[in-house]
Length: 338
Image (cartoon, rainbow, N blue to C red; front, top):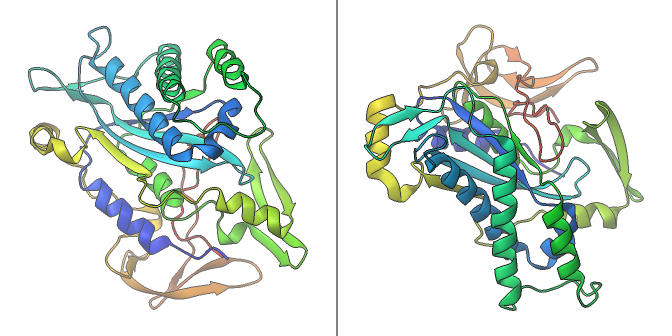
């Protein structure tokens, strides 16, 4: 059964936001075509690297181009591999600065728009395909047993003809909203306790939100199928699912310091319902006094969190974040009611 990971989420967000610039950020989502899912299952580590590299190089190349902004941005990327029904759905979430450092080492804003999405889609497709073909020709890819001779070539050409999924979300005044979204998956996992409705020897029932028709639905899976879906999202040992690039990369401390002197670092933002990380201390959303988390309480009407001083219910905060190919309302609540 999934457990509450709220403290780890808060700690991760607090650690990451210390290096973010006090400037607007965009949220970009890169997804691979579903035709490549069988290939992903047999080459997860290689395709993970290809997905990160092609996404990063696409944004770097276009942001550096004089046709657009001519800057080096800061980027934080996170890999998510699941869809709403726990199916395989690999995609990259990228938090990118709405600006960057010019060749003259001056900070330059991008303005209201980041990049033309059609150009991003086309370049991303080309870079991913080129890296994939390179691995294939070198004999480094393991093909699924069910694929016939020539199946790779057929799918490769078919994917070149289709439009790939890339979403550029609205600009955020700061990056904390997306960081909170990242944390739910990086430190939380694919299924929250409150989604689980019933467990018995025959299977498990859980609810999810279907963004295709904007309805909450219920799904029942047999034990073996539930375990199969969950286990396929466990990352390979030692593989980094969150990576920093550009001005946010650890090796770019000099440029990072240069930018932070010009635009500053992210100020401490109030977390949803007034939560502030301080060991196990949180802040009441009503009176803003420090309260110590002691456990959870349930009632017939409401679910919530029990505090030494008073009680508060942590609801999902606002924020619309799209989940790969699917639109996603991405609630920002860190302590999920079980």
